[in-house]
Length: 64
Image (cartoon, rainbow, N blue to C red; front, side):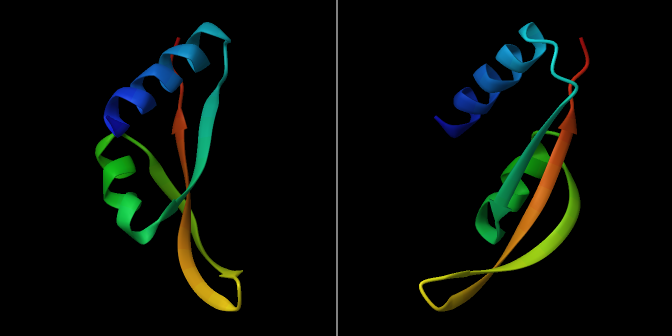
């Protein structure tokens, strides 16, 4: 299901002539996005309800 959603997002991004898609992925989602061709830009520590979490800013270039 997640793969189909990302595929649809990427098709729409192409249609709209976007150059890049950027996401902030959890540790769990990082490998999923890497498999889909996204590259890690940086890791970051965010805080939610007093809990510090690591996530990853990731990007994928859109080729028309």
